[in-house]
Length: 208
Image 1 (cartoon, rainbow, N blue to C red):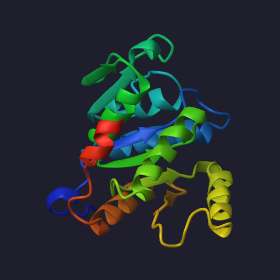
Image 2: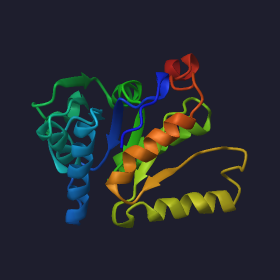
Image 3: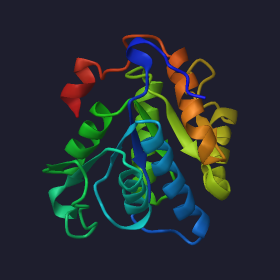
């Protein structure tokens, strides 16, 4: 069942952060395929890092194979290493990682982190930092496939327990163990988000 929301808070594009490798478990690639299919079937555009390898390639190819739309955003120096996917409808090549991340943010209504490495973690945590500082209220969700993100969730709990994440800071960490829960949870979170906080504030945009 699709829920249709009016106005700003409808999710039309989702940015996926994920590994440029496939990982050790076939479940990771299966999840990437399932997520791409869900986007295509729900008419949601995928925004991602532009590569054709690993989970990154899997989610993009699946979105395309099921008739969906994809925007790839890749820095010039990674075009060869991550083998830019030429099939996508829109490929944006940026001069550096900062510009890549800024454009990924601007093009997206929500963010999903599939399993990945340091780059995935860095992009995910950056979105959470901006959210914590009140710079945006776009939903951020951990796709906790095979419990992949448990060590990070434990670290966040530890940060709260040691009072480095203060109780007053409302960081909403969404998570889903199953791909079919991803879009419903993003939509529910978007519906709760206040209007007008979905854009980066001018101060933050100028700093990036």
